[in-house]
Every structure is written in C-alpha cells, then in structure tokens.
Image 1 (cartoon, rainbow, N blue to C red):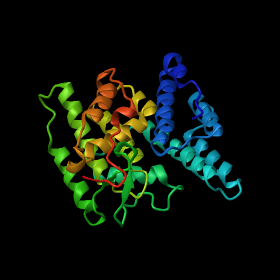
Image 2: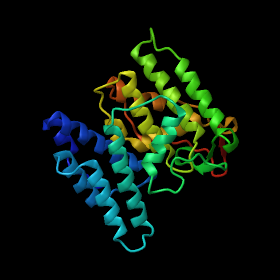
Image 3: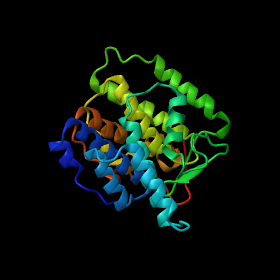
Image 4: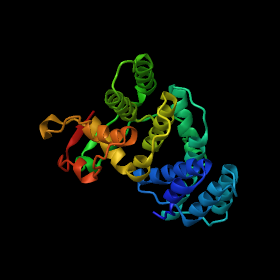
Length: 281
C-alpha cells in the first residue's frame, strides 16, 4: 500500500496535523481488512488535507471528480475507488467529536463510510451470509441470521449500556471492550464493510469512554490481524477442536489501550479447520 511518512507528522507536526495524520493513517490502514489498496492520488490529497491546503470536503469532491472522469471501472480500479473514498470518509468521521452509543450510530457510521460506494450503505442485510475464513483454514463462520439482526444489536447494546466499568482495573476494562467488540462484529449486520464500520465505531466509543490520547497505530498497522482476531473470538467447531479464543483480540486491545508490546502476527491466528469444515458461532 502506498504510504507517505505519517509518523513524521505525528512526531514533529503541530497537534492539529498530528491528529489528522493519525486519522488518515488509520483510515488507509483499515482498507487492508478487505485486501484493498489506496491510490497515490489519495495519498497526495491526504497530505494536502493534513497541511491545511484542502478541507476534507474538498478531498471528497476531488475523489468524486477523479473517478467520474475515468472510463467504466472494473477489477482493481473499482476496488481502488472504494479504498480511496472509504478512507476519506473514515478520516472525516474520526475528525468529528460527535458520538452516541446506539445501534443507530453504528448503522449511521456504515452509511457514511460507504455512501457513494455501496448501494446498500447503511442498510442491514436481508439475507443470511457465510464467508470462508483464512484464519480457520477455509472454514466458515456462521453469522447472525438476517431475521434477528435488529434484536441481536439491541441486546448487545443494551447489555453494554447497563455494564459498569466502576472498580475495574484497566486490564479488565480492555478485556471487556474486546468482548463487546467481538459480540457486535459477530452479528455482522451489513452485507459488506462490517469490520471497517466496527473499527470506526469502536474507536469513537473508546474516545467517548475517556480513552483520549491513545495511539491508534494497531488499527493502522495491524487491521488484518484485528479482523482475524475477531474471527477466532467467534469460531467454534468442537469436532475440529476449535473454540472461541479471545486472547488474540485481548492482545490487540492491550497494545491499543495499555501500550503493551504484544506480538501481532497473523500466522499465530491460523488454525487448520479442514477444507470442508463448518465453523459455527
């Protein structure tokens, strides 16, 4: 993925530039969860936004014009269009100081991330889905059924809203946040873009909880690990000896929120579930 030195802005830049640089680094890094790459053009626009030469609205308009001028897009160009536009939307959302803890916010984030990219942006899926997962050796996670998506989201959000962090150690807080994140991701309410929407929602939720000033480098640099850790936290196949394992997600959030230095290697998350295995949640 084409990247310029965001870290240089974070080390030496003014606070406003540091914040923008981190938001762009996360936005671009999160495209890795779906194997997407941003264009050099997006990188240049991001740099101009950090420098104050372009507003985020001007970045989005430049991208719209840039891709409208292209002939019919297929394959790699279409995927780059998605990566560029969603990156700009993520950077915009992360720059905003607004948040309300609710399923509506979660769904609204998906709508804003993928507006102009997916026709179904902000819409929960109307059909059941399965996906073959690399982390499960080709096994399939079974997500929540389409008929119960609203109830499943309401249940998880209501449970979290009633949960008290009072008296918990920071480590216990982090473990609970990892558990909540795994739960809403496991529902998989959208046709596409679930991991990116979940990541943005969780970052904004953490800020609302008071986790200010933490580095989002793990999201920027290890987003595919984040997705695979979510898979491992949800997967069960007793015949194959696969059980929900949240330790990988705990390690990710430990790095994110506690400054731990856990090794985040994707090879550590892979299990050989068998080519035809079905991994159920």
